[in-house]
Each structure stands twice: as C-alpha cells, then as structure tokens.
Amino acid sequence: MDNKDLKKKLRKLKPILEKNYKVKSIGLFGSFARNEANEDSDIDILVEFSENIGWEFIDLKKFLEENLDREVDLVTIEALKPELKEDILRDVIYLLLSSEKCTTLPIELCTT
Image 1 (cartoon, rainbow, N blue to C red):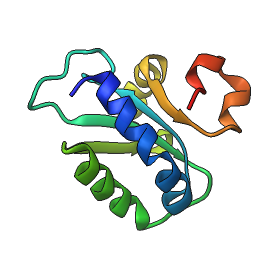
Image 2: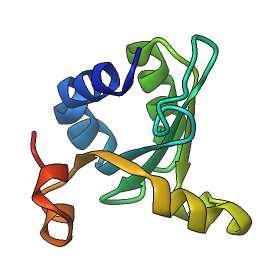
Image 3: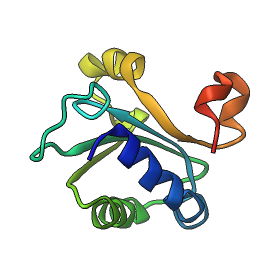
C-alpha cells in the first residue's frame, strides 16, 4: 500500500471518522509520509479531534488497523514527545481535514 491507496481508504472512512470518532484531522508522518514504507511498516497517524473522545481513542486505533490492514501508531499533538514534535509537525502530510481546519491551510489539502 502506498500514500495514494492509503489516502483513498481514509477518504472512504471520513464520514465514520467524523461522526463516530469526532476526528477533525488526520495526517501521516514517518515512513508512509516519506514514501519509504515497506510491507513491515506501521502507519504513523497524527490525529486531532473536535472534542475529547476518551477511551474511544483505543477503539479508533483498532478501527483504523482493521480497515487499513496495518498496525497503526495513533498519536495526538499533545502526546508527541517534545524532542520529536517540531520535526513531525513540519513533515506531516494531512489526508483528512475538517472544513474548519481548511480555513487556514492550502485548498489542495482540503479536497474530498
């Protein structure tokens, strides 16, 4: 699976992610973002929520793993290690963005 396949799968899941898990944005970082992923690579996903989802965070991780057929490393901006945060935020590739988030980002990132 490459970035295009992953993007397509996540876009199909967008209504469920927004409704059931209150996802505001999802971005890739790590090997998939750098196009260096192999068959053993997990998917590193930076997620932002429109509201606190509590324990449903674990359900979201499982949901993504089941639908993407890969192990997922799911993190929020708040959970990023300080020594990695700047690099991750600089390199993240956003795949899903709410219309609210799109008011501050280039339009090509906000297409559905």
